[in-house]
Length: 198
Ligand code: GAR
Image 1 (tube, rainbow, N blue to C red):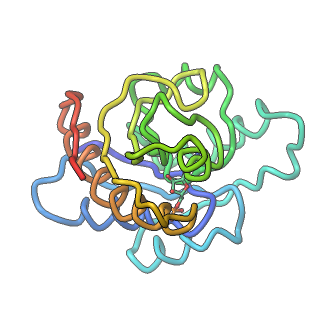
Image 2: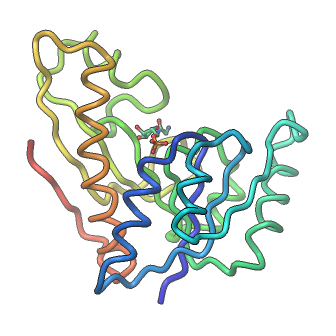
């Protein structure tokens, strides 16, 4: 079995989708820990409710020292012996050293059709650009932000009356389909591209 650690910062709806899929049959992944960078992360309760251990490594005491924050993360993960990491709405940038340490073993979901709209405010940026399609991507994490080989994408059609909020809500529905589908394949050793149409 592949031991999966999931990193969250907020409500953890993607984390829930991953945990619920790992609980279904035929999955090579098994959740070993959920890590949050704040005890306020709403997803922690959802992980606990599913019997998955949680740890909090608050980034605030490490302000300006990402390496020390990551050393604390590494120490917190150690007892759970993860084989891979899923970033699921984890809103802290990771250093190149951490990315290198987990190269090929860390994946992320991002709310855009990468390589478009790396970083924040992806839905507003897609609307401002007049895009007709938008979506989400799962990719391997490398040293550069929201970069790295793309493992899967789901396409969402943009509607004329969309706001960033309505568009985000429809993209999130697709995230909850795409991320579990990609993790299921990835944990089984399949890194081929998965495209979900709108
Ligand atoms: C999701 O839309 C995810 O794609 C995005 O944050 C949201 C987290 O929701 N991630 C990023 O923007 C990463 N840079 P969740 O906590 O309910 O899964």
